[in-house]
Amino acid sequence: MSIRDIIEEIEKGCVEDRYSSGVLEDAGEVEKYFEDFESAAYFVASYRDFYSGEEAFDDPVGYAESWYESFGSMDGITDSFKV
Image (cartoon, rainbow, N blue to C red):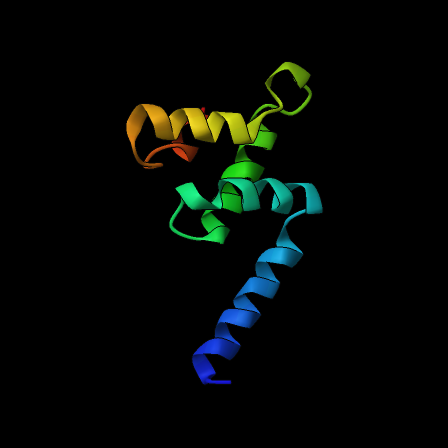
């Protein structure tokens, strides 16, 4: 195992410790739209924070898919949650 592999393993562990299992599960579904898994997890967590308590909007996967279909990239998606 190279130093780079070890660093990547540590970084992955930090991401897994930072987010809940539900966030990580949804991040796995939308990771293909983002640069990396951490960006996907950050998006899902931001989405859930923004829409907390509003069950009608509890669909970060659908939102990410719709955003990607509309814009072709995920640039600015988490900025849309900032007030």
